[in-house]
Amino acid sequence: MNLTATEEGALALEEIPPFLFELVKAVPVRADSSDPRVENRFYPAPALDDLLVEDWKSLVHPELQSMFLSAREVVQADLRSAMELEDEFSMEIPADHMDAWLSALNQARLAIAEENHFGEKDLGEEISPDTSDPRSIALFQISFYGFLQECLVKMQD
Amino acid sequence: MPSVDIPEAETREQTGLASPWNVVVHNDPVNLMSYVALVFKKVLGFSKDKAQRHMLEVHHKGRSIVWTGGRERAEFYVQQLHAHLLLATLEPAPQE
Image 1 (tube, each protein chain N blue to C red):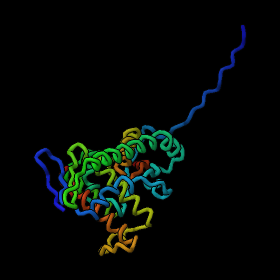
Image 2 (image 1 turned 135 degrees about the vertical axis):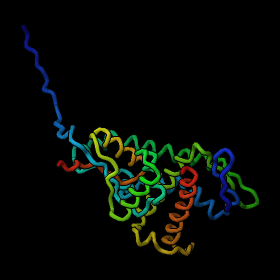
Image 3 (image 1 turned 120 degrees about the vertical axis):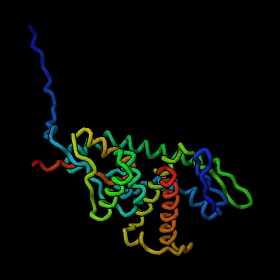
Image 4 (image 1 turned 135 degrees about the horizontal axis):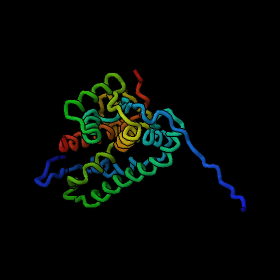
């Protein structure tokens, strides 16, 4: 897989092998979780103050929900314009979509980590992707999404 | 003159509006260090060095106070940090 910055400031992903493209396509799907642990992580309490927590739930959470959804929708739209050529895929992340991708990738990484109860130790493990082991795939997915995030962060830095 | 029932107004007492509040960012094993530093720059307007310093404090000490000031602004920053999926809280700043 090749990643390059275009003259327009987009990130071009080229020659993506099918296995990795499946993972890229899964970003908005993995980010959209209804697991209560994921919900707790996405919408943490802002303070110990019960009144503020109550207000936060009714005022801030709907706004955050809509922001997270909107980021996933931008990613979905970019994925629809991906192209396949000789069993490899290519696509672009336009400069003005990078924040949405950073958010969706982060949502996906956090959701996978929460669903699998991954902690610092698990995430620090050396990864040898084993397609028959769901835990290994989940760890690889977090690592791969982290790699994409790093590229986007570098482009914004 | 007819009597008018005046409904009792429901009020919530909010104390400490004028006292300072800390915005605290907590460690999280999933968020990338480079991403956390980028969010500090975007949300709090930190320089690259300051963002890096606070990010490392979060990583090594488990938390960092990234801003201190009025409650309304503190709530705004916590909301922005939550929008970037960082674990942030606000707490009253200790008074001297």
